[in-house]
Every structure is written in structure tokens, then in C-alpha cells.
Image (cartoon, rainbow, N blue to C red):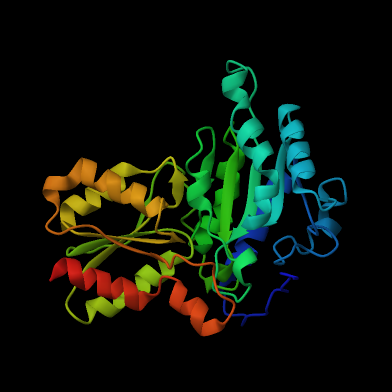
Length: 336
């Protein structure tokens, strides 16, 4: 099955799409540091499976934007070697399910080499991959495996949810001396917004409060942040004030921002597109209970994907994924 989609045009209204913001971040990185190069399947002549690198080959040439053979283990391994040699590679894996073919390289090499070398070897590698469902790509191309990777010491795991974060996250990731995984939710590529001229960087150590509220904290990340904001807006009409926290960095988690919000609102709903069993949402819920149990006025609710392979059929897919209506229902339960 092909997962290729070409970028859609959008009105010239001054907005920037998530895709364009990522591309501008890549362009800036390539232009400002000769050590940076992009490699992956179809990132060059095709412009990337999802159009993120469109035009960069013509601008920077084949030494800086490299098409690779269809072997994730090989080109992720090559990226690790280049990072060890002093380069700053950005490796694109087409979709998150294909990262499983490079799991040995990511888990046993990139994440462990600093520890195994007694601090002598760092791997300043950035791996970008598309994640998430909601685009009718069926069970093999709709995974949300961020929670798996957030389990691994030695990695930093990022999930930008806004155009500002998409624009500036790469610079911060490339500055990290250790491997960084960057998860781009596929449903966000066409999302458009105004870039904030006051934002010039991303604090990778801090979650972001996207909407302030007093009655319930909704914790989300990646493609679920917009759904959480939509739910919060709907609840405002009912007199429920919801605060939305965008985790942004999944490893290491920013406990302080999440717990601080829950201590103000006394209620929490955690939204996670991953499956509920063994999920990142379970980790967030556990930390809330460990650190703010006596501040809670109700049990923590979780809204996750159904425990099934993601269906292809549109209505079944929508039913399997977290939706604003489900977030609203969970929030109503904790405030009732």
C-alpha cells in the first residue's frame, strides 16, 4: 500500500501549514550548519512521502538531501555512524510502523552508546517519523507508538502539536547531544495557523499550557491536542472551564507542569491515541496519582484508542480513535 500524499494548497492568507513549518525548520538547519544533512526514503526527488522536504534537494543538493534504499535498519545505522563521526544527521522514517525495522539500531545502539562507552560517545541524531491514524491508511500504517519509545532511557521523544513548535523544534532537537525522536502526526500536516513572531525556540523540557482553565485539566499531545482544545471550547458553552496541557516532550515527561495544573483544577482527563493497555496515558495518570492524589476531587479519566487494529473504514476508524465528544464525556464525569 502506498502512503504517499502530496501537499495540498491553502489560501494565501498569511497562515503557515504544519508541513511548511517543518520544512522551514529543515531549511534553516541545513543552511546554518554544514554538518546537518537529511536522509531517508524519497526525501529528495520526490520531496518526502508527505511533502515536508519538497524543494530542499534543488536548494541544497544530493550530498545534503540523500535518498536512501528501502532499508530502515541500514539508513538509521548510517545515521548513527554519521552522528558518531561528528555530523548532525536528520533521518526520516516514512511512518512509525517502519521504525520497527530499525528498532535494533534505535534501542541497542543509538539509545545505549553513551552509557556503554562510559560517556565517551554521544549520538546527536534526530529521527523524524509520521505517526497516528485518522487518514484511512488501515492497521499497518496507523500506529501511535510514541509510548513505546518513551519507555526507553537514552532517547528524547518529542511530539509537536502546533505550527510554532513544528517550526522551531528541529533546532532544539539538533542541539541535543543525544538521540531525539520526532513524531509528526499525519493529520496535522495540512493544519494551518499563524506563526507567532515572538516565538524563536522550543523549550524541550517543558510542557505547554495551551488553554487555561479552572475546573478540569486535559492532558494531551500531538494530534490529540487540537481535539482537546475543541472539547474545551465545547465545554465552555456548558460552563465548564478546562485547562489543556500539551505534553510536547514525552520523554522526559514534565511532571511539574502537569501536576501543577491538576493541583489547581483538582480533576484530570488524559487523552492518548495509543492503546489504553500499557499506554503513555497510564504513565501520566500514575504520576498524577503519585504526586497529587490528595488534590484530586475525582478519579483520573483516560480517553484512548479502542483495543483493536485501526480499521480502514472511515466510520469505524473514527469510532476507534479519541474524539472531542469522548473527551467532553470524560470531563463531564469528573466534574459531576
